[in-house]
Length: 358
Image (cartoon, rainbow, N blue to C red; front, side, top):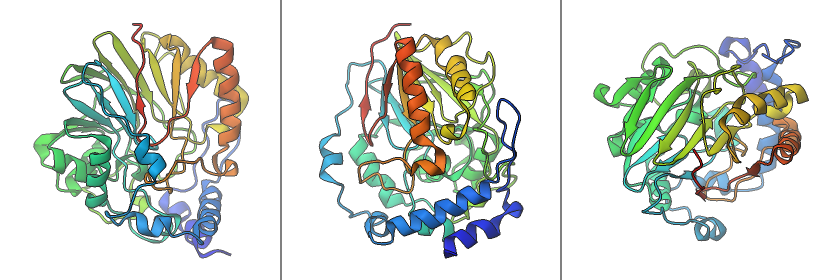
């Protein structure tokens, strides 16, 4: 048995790896431990003959030319545009101010992810900020407190002085990283926050049905820390608007019936992590409850990429057996074609612009 498989399985129930799936039909218990075991074993083997992950956390690491050449500057006159930074980390700009949804840039190799405590890499964050043109970040909104959404929160908040908005667990991650209490704000459902000319509204929405490390972070969490200590702590979605343009960001692939019935958006940033493990009826209901009520004509897939692969390289999805990505895309393509919606899978650092309709 691969050592990383043993590590994942050994973590087992004591770290909250087993979770009952909240599928629409209520059936089945998903032993997420096995998924993490496969993840550790398979990905470790996949990357064992490559040093790209071992070298990535060195801030001098060269970015792949195809990544660098694709980076476009922020438009000054666009009232709302976005840049995809992998997983669910998205930067928004109104031309003068910027905000972040989630804060995960220090991506770790499978070996480090499973075998070592995790910590933000400030030099790497600085490098990513430079490439992404992030020099006016005023606020950070955190969807939930798993490591792949929050690992770099402290580094970014201290670097920029940005306000942090999140759950009680997010507050404890920020405090553990040394963020000043005055910068930290607890989220409330339906709360609205102004960031420059942008307006951000919060919606309490469920995490995707396969929740690893559920529960709450009850005290300040300092780094390095094992990934099992980054508990979910509640989950949020966000609506961002400026001028005549708007976007809905749903980081986790799940829904509350009727949650977005009164929400309009030009584009939906749609979380698809583990969506392919759900049945066709769940995927259609997810689409019908999240995309269709908004009237959006464009959907940008997020949480689609292998978050153990560095941002310095072209992004790729996890192998399909891990989260069923191919099945999810096939189902979403069918729904998008049926409803006249454009579906997009963004690459790292991609600048995303769209026309305002609402």
